[in-house]
Amino acid sequence: MQKTPVAKPSNSCPPENWIWKEGLTLKGHSGWLMAGVRTVAISPTQPILASAGDDNIIKIWNLNTGQEVITLSGHSASVRAITFSGDGLKLFSGSDDKTIKMWDLVTGQEIFTLSGHSQSVTTIAISPDGKSLASGSDDKTIKIWDLEAYQELGLKTAGEICTLLGHSDYVQSVAFSPDNLTIASGSCDTSIKIWDLTTSKEILTLSGHTGYIRSVTFSPDGLSLASGSDDQTIKIWDVNTNKLPLTLSGHSSKVYTISFSPDGLAIASGSDDQTIKVWDLKKGKLLQSFTGHLGGISSIAFSPNGLILASTSWDKTVKIWHCKKVKLKLSKQFLSFISICSFILIFGLIISNHGFIKFIYLIFDTIKLYLLALLGMIISIGALILCLFVIIKLISSLIQSGKSTGENSNYNKSSNPFIRSSNKHISSDQVYVHPHRRKDGTYVKGHWRKKPK
Image (cartoon, rainbow, N blue to C red; front, side, top):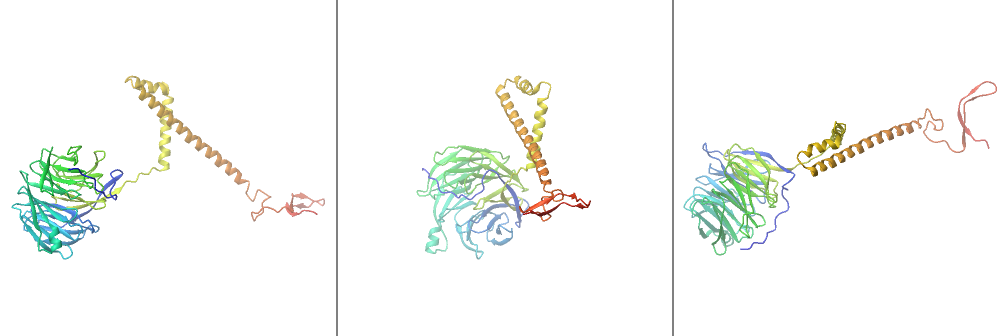
């Protein structure tokens, strides 16, 4: 099925020149020794996030302050997956108790419970139009639930639309395409399957991973599908050609979770190696790897603007990470220091035993890299010219400063009789009489007087 790109948001964290910094750490989940926080989700409309785990409860937190807002209790086993509704007012949860629950976040009450899976519900996803809910289970099936009929007809619960059969092992992750036409599923059978939601039929199977598929997600424009696996890699698939254009390697253990940035330029991955990595998808390179959790990373989620990343771990905590721009400023003093050091280095080469040109030639002649030698000469000569220019400018400014000082001294009131104490020039109808002695021997000081008519 040919995909057309879906408009993607423009307000996100640019991949380059930005860095992720650890913010708040949210503590409140409990449980047995090996229990952890399994899943996290950030509201698309409100400054809140939800987390859930092996203590069977869901906690709602204020994203800005880190304060706990409400606790949702009702599941009788570990909560494996959560997702917000499109308006951010409701929350869906899937659990090891084989059920899916819908919660009203305004009242904190459970709205309904969906039953149908015969084993743990490991993953859930809501369609972009909010009309359908998908769930994956350890019973190797994916179920599609009708939210539209529930909303429009005022039913007490949502009905099951269909069950998708095809995986031969546990279903670990499901994701809707942005155009609502297909759904992807990842399984412990190491395969990814794409399903047509109109016909409820499998379209294709993507093979390439050698370990369990833990997470699948579509890019915001719908043209790419990403998958994370126990084989320690993230693979990016072209949805239209079904080819594998990119494999990201760098984790040293299982990749449990992945998430596209809202603009689709980057992807974040969380692993059992306790690291979160952010990758530049255009260049296919690692941008940043950061740590902070004391256990494996079980889930990550971007905020709608892409400037916040939330993560959960087996260490029973939730961490909030902030994307901040790196500001690089070079002071004038630092640039002057570099110029002086460059001049000293080049001057030392010039006065060396063999001279500058011979020095460069002897280094590179042995490895026959004449072009590189020529390039080094050009760069060095250019640096020398730049340093000489800086020195000439400094000398020129010093000379100019001396001239200015000399000129300014001519305007000293005590030494210049042509400037009055009021610092105003004499008018043209006055004349200065120099100091002299009269005929009777008396001394007359210099003074101004009116010109004789």
